[in-house]
Length: 258
Ligand code: NAP
Image (cartoon, rainbow, N blue to C red; front, side):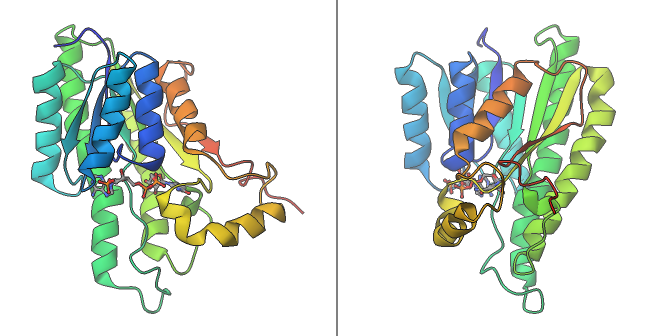
């Protein structure tokens, strides 16, 4: 049991999820640091939080798998006795980045399981728990944040499955926002632009050039911390009369220009 609010961040071992976990820990949350395969990286995140006096533990689990999702929530409640925040961050890009005409069902299944089925059913499960915990007086309300992408609207023909999951995540945010408002649970989408992480390492040079040419107005790489700060603002209840809202963290990429 903990008196701190508790945040479960999926894919918190690296990149954006790691930065979100560290930022929420700094803001006074106890953290569940989920990962799928890189245990050491997740343990480092927990080590960093513990060294700063915070509470955290690692929780292995593939968000695309029903049993793993159930275990993730069970471990959170066993350990901390509550859940106040869910950040659906874990995500993978299209496997092999194949052209639309070559795209495989194997990639489709993996990307949809991780990026859409996982967040959808984890949100469902966590929402049920939040409603129960609120009725019991354990939590005041909840927040859910879904990490989408500019790929929700800016298509890449070599990453069709990725784009489709991210645009669906947008609708998912609105579905849960509408359903959970009466329960005191706010649901938000954060739409990152190109962020420096392992995911974008293979396209580093391409974006170095495009950024210098001014592809988006703020001419630099996005950093995981840029996304983390936006999540922290939502979680801190800085938008109390908003839900289903999208925050672009993209250097202004979404602005259409002539
Ligand atoms: P990343 O550096 O590749 O890290 C991915 C994280 O997700 C890792 O912690 C990984 O765990 C975890 N993960 C992968 N599959 C998982 C699964 N099935 N179950 C649980 N965890 C899983 O990626 P990132 O760049 O930080 O991206 C994080 C999120 O932001 C993704 O949803 C991505 O689509 C989105 N996003 C990224 C960018 C960008 O430019 N980087 C832009 C827009 C949106 P392990 O360490 O155990 O592998």
